[in-house]
Length: 344
Ligand code: AMP
Ligand code: MG
Image (cartoon, rainbow, N blue to C red):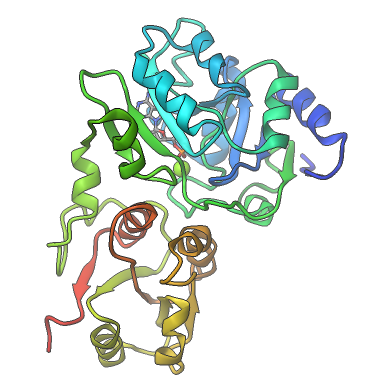
């Protein structure tokens, strides 16, 4: 199959992409979070192609993307007041809500669950594609399963050229990490995945938020040497990733003590001078966490190179969007975290 590259700037793109989706083809779409691998979310055969292209386990559910917030009513039932309040505050935007699924949503889309994840993305061209397609677009991140997510059209082509009908090139994704996911099907709202909408923003609207165990384990500050979950790798390059925590100076001393030829350093722009002899790669500025979230996956993909043995990575601290960056980087590192100050 020849994969067509469609430009977001071309006025014909929404109609062309929508027609492909209506015909049951796969189209990669830009969003403010990451690129999604989109298909008609109500068409089981089309959805099956997503799982096949990504090598994604069948029980890993997809997110249903809608053009307008009120469209959630077409695909979800028993919608609590909190869902309307979150939609009002954050849609279109990087927030996904898990709600009870209507029967029209195939179980293949929900990974066999009776709930469905919905999101209204903040990208005008992608919303127009969904509108014209006349169906919700099921779209997981457009990377191969287990690999770092795709934040440019070039990343998508790297993983899927020749396997999907089209890629809509909308430039680099602004947020750069996948959407925040909140489960609203229990008594209390539950954060399943941190993202561009922060726990603080959610709590301001909901007044209450349970952070799922998996999330807290991932960001556990006490995981000084190795936290549990070492075997679970996601968002990860082939090379071993080790997060070095602690002060800038202590981390640099640790890395210099352990660095071997063939290793790389993934750091903040402010730290580049400290690693002149360690082939450093900066993924953003420590002083501006939005640059870190926007740059993380492109950097992890660049480091997905068989000639690299180890990557020593620096991770931002604190809440807000840093919480999401920590989550992705710690997963990429399979929770291998060392304290740069512990050996001193
Ligand atoms: P991705 O779009 O690749 O980031 O993957 C979608 C994410 O949404 C996965 O982590 C899913 O587990 C999660 N998700 C989708 N639907 C549901 C659901 N019904 N309940 C819980 N999580 C979900
Ligand atoms: Mg994904």
